[in-house]
Image (tube, rainbow, N blue to C red):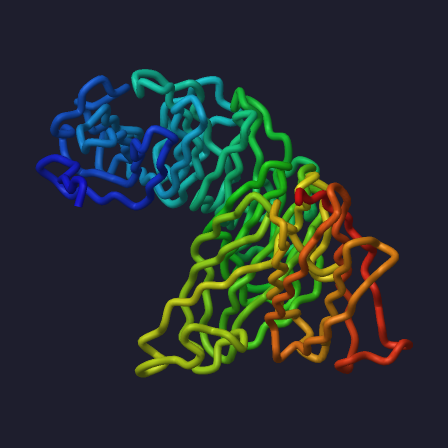
Length: 428
């Protein structure tokens, strides 16, 4: 253990989210009822709790020392629920506030919070934690909460949460406008680097309860959002809901006006996705909770069955194939399948793992030293991992990979739906 430390004061203090920068400093947010934050050095407001629960943000160095702590709040209850950090060390916090005078700085929107409703808020702290770069509310006249936040290389913040403001939550561009009836709807919003304008803001909702609980962003600006839904339609797209609530995983394009994919995962009980991370190829890693006894999993699952009473619940982890190639071009894993990434090796080893939404499909993998000379290797959906090794002797060239789908293994010609070939360089 490198370090372990208390953070807080004499009241109730809870840390609810964490992020880490390139120097291995940790940034946390949550809420505190303490009148002051112990050891809060250099913070924007480390000394005064403005009332009830105040959100707070803190930076802890790689050795466990408190770099800064600060309250964020007004006279009512305020909680920090998500935090992110950019390359410069600026922290971005989202959550909810019941305070009509939550501190506004370069704000896109004033707070509409009242004694009965909360607004989502987004606050950016400078790297020293001594000043607010911007601080804004985001919401309508009903309940709005920011539950997760991510930041891209340009400093744009991506916020996910839920809203009950079906008539006046801010909409800019996006996939879905204001719904016709009141319900809990997920939302996704992208704030400009200045925090004073929305690049896009959209509902992700249907007729039931829909909550976005996690968000991530890739290098191309695609947003990845996960949560829960009881709806049969989400963002104007029909979905399958197998139980009381299903986990959903969605990816929005960089403009926020289209879906790269929308997937639900669940069985007969309650299934919720809480968090998402994304790698350099746009593969999404999703963590959540399921009460379903037969939650969908792959043939190579580490644990295929629920252990203990279903009502007690189990955690789950899901990986969704990437939508980026090394060149940055976007693909759709639901219609094109994931591209295979060939490493810089004398003997490229291709490993392909994918379970489609429609389990009836099988997959065909082909690889060859030139695009005109192809060897075929067949593997069915149920045998979901195929590894191929091929020695390349040419001094320069490309290895071509093609992924096809079919209903049989090996597939007849008339059922061979080939995906366009992708070429990648290799070194001998």
